[in-house]
Amino acid sequence: MPKHIKYLCPTVNNMDLQQINWIAYADDMVLNTDTDYVFKINVEKYYNLVEEEYLNLLSADELVKANRFIQLADKQRFVTGRHFLRHIIARKFDKFNAEILFKYTEFNKPYLDGIEFNIAHSGNYVLVAISNSLIGADIEFMNNSFDHTDIMYEIFNTNEVAYINNAQTEALNFYTLWTRKEALLKATGEGLTDDLKIIDCLGDVVERSQAQYTLISFRINDDYMAALASTANNNLLFFKL
Image 1 (cartoon, helix red, strand yellow):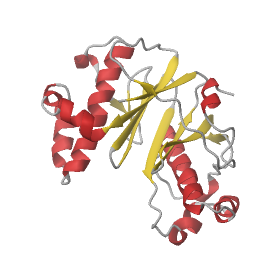
Image 2: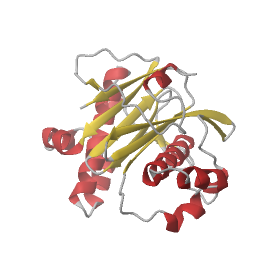
Image 3: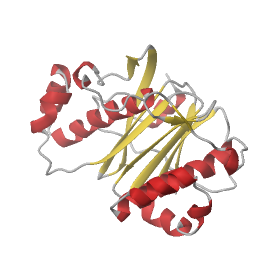
């Protein structure tokens, strides 16, 4: 079992999810190449710090994409994620920003040679996960007024539906399983597919695309659920900004 599991409850069936031991991030911290990292970023706080600087850091393509967003909040989340990703790759892998030229898989998932990463965002939070192995992350605001029954039977199999319906906290279970599926499919690079029912995410290990992924679930706070899917067996550290 990966060492990072120690921070979490041992199984998703245990509803008493533990809080992550979030470490305050500082630029002078040493980041190891054999350790996986997850960074929780407050969008409003971070964007205010880089609002002028990001224009000189993001690539031309990234700036074009940022300016296509109609909603300012969407632009700020995108800029926050890409700006910090570039910052942390440069630090962790001793690269200049100009050397960070993203490549894309057949599913249009960005990557760098020897470096895997994923960005997830919801509301005022962005998660950046980085590893030397395949990794995916998802975060969702838990809207307790959302009627999940309308789509539940379209995306979850019989066992998963039973897991959701048998709990007093149905919304929590719904978002737990939803973020696990999203994180897994972001790790494989597929994105959402038409066969969500056959992807059973009740277990801690799921086989997909001829690889085994460890799934972990954690709370950002009382309002947000998150999940991580990874093929790595590295130490995993969580930082907050």
